[in-house]
Length: 572
Image (cartoon, rainbow, N blue to C red; front, side, top):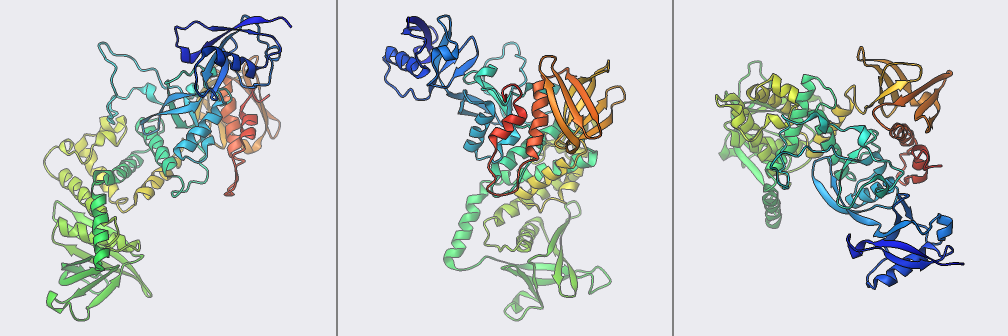
């Protein structure tokens, strides 16, 4: 068989280096081509991650046993020997940018699986990659690292996630024009979150919370004013522990020291108590109180604390609520203690903020079955003091915006920033905060996600489409369990179709039209105006795949089924 010259560029030789010419025959296999090229470079290194990229066809040649003839490669082909794994910059939902090596030769879905494995994120089928919005370059702006600023008062509308920018899960990154060190967004694409477990999904929950938070702050999803204040309060509750992160070591040190001396920490002080069931008038009486383990005991005086207490109350499982007004210097703790005959209601009144912070923290921990020796005691105290500081600021005559402990511009959407001044927002957020202040960090995130998922428009991705037989554009909303048709003229949902009534769907790739058949001989067809119909096809197929997942622990990801349902041309 006659030999001929084949031109192959080698990335390691540099951009300016001319392609290498090697003599080949049509029956030479791809592996042999790579061997010839490597030998001609005379570079000694590990070439195992390299593969051939066919520039004209935008195609990887990943089957080393295939011959040049079988691949359809002739002398005019331009090939490049390049690594399959390259650096990529990923912008996470929390806006942090990670630089990591990912696979540029596998289908993008497989690349996402690899990213999730590296980041310890379960259920990678829920996430995907998309192009960022092109940033407008300002005049005289030098390339520099972007500061971590979360004030979104002037956030451009273009920041909102646009489903038109999603990458194709069936094609490789290089096939879709992604280059080494490009920046892509890493986001949850399918709003069907399977088997969320706080112990196993720390990263997944945190990033999901961040994506939900920005969706609310940037008004990608609508919510009521009350819901916005609650979202703001939950953000305050989540961020509070960060302000006191430096105390973690101190609290652990206190715990270790107490264990070393075999002496459990205790609280002792004069407090006032009021029991509604015992008295008709709300009158507090002062006693000497001790807090040990998970119980409160009180005595007539400090001198009598060596005798039997007047009463001992075990707080494990009780309800703890603040009854506080910094303006009037009222620092009360309301306790509902379970007893055989019912709930025993008790109020404790402290003299000042410092005393209240310690005793309130102790009561909260005891209600959860924890003692003062627990490492979270100091953090809990500081969290309460932070709350009191915010309330003190809101009740003072000073401008609320001068207080760094609560920045309303980072907690509510621009709509409410324009409607209310910071000094009006602060007390409303604090009022909502009192109802969630007892939540742990994990419970705060879960509560935020629960309210987010309960919003009427949760999980809807919108496309401008034109239905077959209609002359005007309409909106198609795709959710995890249904499709909705929205009339742009009246801005109302005119029709809903559920996936459990769907018999089949297909795409006419020639005319780029999606056709769906439902039970009852209902057929719809539409063309996509604002996006490639492949994206709509992927959304529908993706949600159908999500519904097939099992709750069994050993349930493995069926990558083949995902490609069959979402792949389109590539699946065939």
